[in-house]
Amino acid sequence: MFGQFFVLFALMAVGYLCSRKGFLNNEMTVGVGNIVLFFTIPALLFSSLANTRVEKDMLLNFATVVALHFFGSLIFGRIIRMYYRFRKFEEAHLDMLEVTAVSVNNAFIGFPIALMFFGEEAVVYMSASVLGLNLYVWSIGLYIIKGIKGESLGTMLRTLVKGAINPNISSILLGLLASVVGLMAYIPGFVQDFIASLGGISTPLSLIYIGALTGNSGLKYLLRDREALEASLIKMIAMPIMTFLFIYFIPMQPLVKAVLFIAMSLPSAAIIPMIVGKYGVGVEASSKMVMITTAFSMATVPICVAISHIWI
Image (cartoon, rainbow, N blue to C red; front, side, top):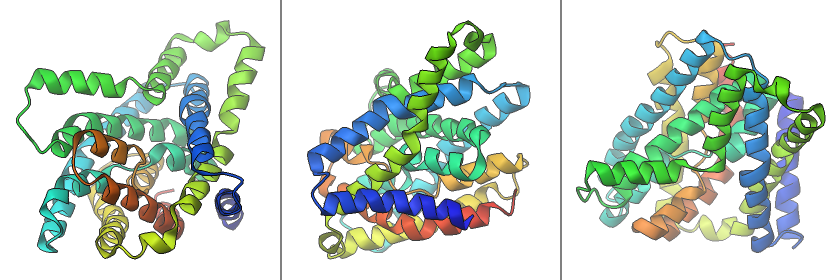
């Protein structure tokens, strides 16, 4: 396990050093992130799912992870919100803080960790976690960020469909379909090799991107914001604890439990500040929370991976 963690942090360190040396400025970092989001992760998802023999038990596990991630996000968000209110955080930021705290970066960080520590089957369940997260973010999460203003069910459904149509979700659904109907038997080998090669660079590029994102943020500046610092620290401590208690007694396969535990223990998702900026209040605080939780994850993720091995 030490060797895997070394690779994980070494790749993040490359990104951090590249940003500090000016090799990757903010615009270039965004470009790397877009390559990962729109090309390498979708290729990894499609290749992993399409080449996996998805049987009844796996589909049941997949659906279970989707449901548990959705309802876990909803429940944990309400609990963390109560803490933030108890601590008298700015009232206008409570909606943003709740959604930012429970919306995890299971794409850029989750997939590399699942693949490195648990293998390709874990990528299937991490993709289910991504689907559960998207269902939460584009329905309940967006509803909360907007200030819970009583929108109609039809409006919420249209927003959910619009937000859910993204490369990751499309690749998940296409990969599952390809597996079920045996589509890969009809795709030329050189095309399959291309998709696999493109997906293969997802892990190093994702981790370099996360390291560069941290380096570009200026941690000294971020750590001066005590509210964002406390909110991030509580998120990175409370989410693993609540998730562990939530799933410990639920009868699931060990690998499913491990992946769901890791998924919900990850730092905040970078997409949330964009949504907050468009629909809500507190975009700067949300952005700071993404950066700080990403930095904290360098300490918390190894602990969570070690804990997850009680099930494996």
